[in-house]
Length: 112
Length: 109
Image (cartoon, rainbow over all chains, first blue to last red; front, side, top):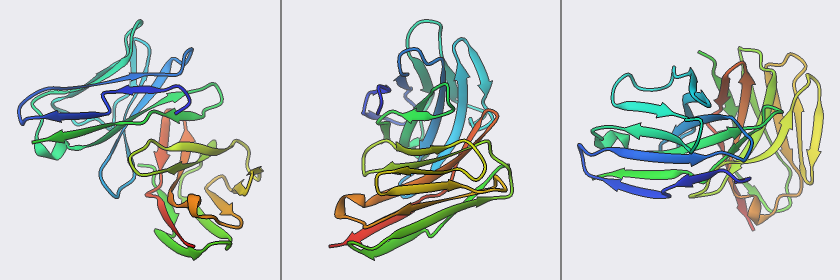
């Protein structure tokens, strides 16, 4: 995973609860992507963040989803009032200088 | 929006055979990336391509950035059982890193 840390690896939430997914990029990287992956499917872009700035959130659902990348600490993807359809694997990728994106191992969210 | 068409969707090949997969798009990309994803893991970067026409190798893997900047292919030579997995192409342009739907590779030993 080239140093991209995501936690937790697995997260179970009841419908209506909040899910918080964390991503620590490669040391020195200041840009992260978040992607969502359903079983047997590809990676769907959600949001592209720079420290303290959202650059592109065109892939984020309009409601319940938010993301941040503070000056200090990991990037957070927050899903409020989760529903069963939110169950998926969520990956973050850390962007290097050469436009190479390195992925974490993902957080598998299960909504019960 | 930008879309990548990746083919084939899946392949079932004999160990030792060569494999070829490709991605095409109606959009131009500045960078093409190829990833492999094993079950339960995140995608791992295999090869990055930065220039139109560029041909790059990584062991048994070879990838090319199409001259029109709208396509790329990945070849795997002499496949082995550990090549099993899902291979994704990705095109980068501006802020967007767009992924193909993946090629599932199954190797028969």
